Length: 324
Image 1 (cartoon, rainbow, N blue to C red):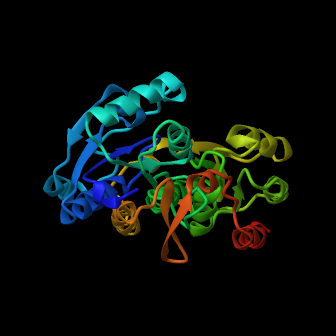
Image 2 (cartoon, rainbow, N blue to C red):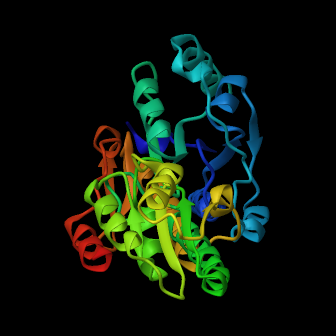
Image 3 (tube, one colour):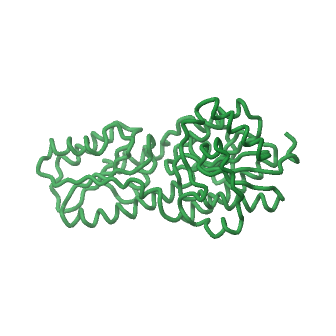
C-alpha cells in the first residue's frame, strides 16, 4: 500500500481494560498530529466499529488523561463481530468515515478479531498489546501488567499484616486468566510461601508439604492464579484436610488489579508502542502487533501473537527454588 494514502487513522480499545491504554492513545494522537494525519476514536471496541460510534480525538485532552487507568474510549467484548454480518457492517462504517488504517489496543481476542476482519478488509491493521495478563507472544510485557502486579503486591503486603497478627494461612487469588505471570511476579515480590499457576502441577504438591506441618506464629501466604487447575477453594479444602487446626482465609483481589493510575513503566510502554504503531503504518506495515523484545521495538504478525505465551524457564526455575 502507498503510505501517502494514509490520511485518516482510527483507534479503538477492546477486551479487558488495562492501565497504560490512555498513555498509548495519547502517543498515537501526538504522532499522528506531527505527521498531519487525522485521528478518530472508536468507542466500545468492536461494538462501536459495528455501530459506527466514531468520535474525534483531541491531543491536548488525551495528554491530560494519559496517566489514568481504564480507557477513555471505553471497551467491550462483541459477539456480533464474531459473525460475518457484523464484520461487513464494520467495514461499511470504515468506508463511510473514510478511514485508511486501524489501530487496535487489546489482547489475543482483539487480534484474532483483526485476523478475521483482514479476510474481507484490505486496510492496514496495527495492534498494541493491552492486557494485564501478559499472555501474548511478541512482547516481553503487555500494557497494564506492571501496574496490575504493583496493585497486587500492595494488597498482598497489607493482607500479610493481618495474617501475621492472627497466625493465619491466607490464599490470595490474583488475575491472569490462563497465564501465571501476575501470580509469579506478585508472589515472588511479596515473599509468598507458595504460588499456584496454571502452567505447573507440581506446585500444589509443594504447597501441601509445607502447609501440612505449618504451626508457626507467623503468616503463611499462598498466591493462586485464577486460572490454576485447582483454584483457591479446592486448595483451601485440601489444606484443611491435612492440617485441620489451621486458621485459613481466602481473599480474591479481583478487578482492583485493573484499576488505578498506570505505573511509570506502563506509561512509558504505552508511549513507545503508541508512537511505534503509527510509524509502522507509515512504513507500510500491516497486520502486526507492536511490542518490546529485549527492550527493542518489535513487530510480530497477528497469527504468531495469539499463540500461547509460555512461562519461561528462568521463572520456572525461580518457582522451584522459592517454593521449596
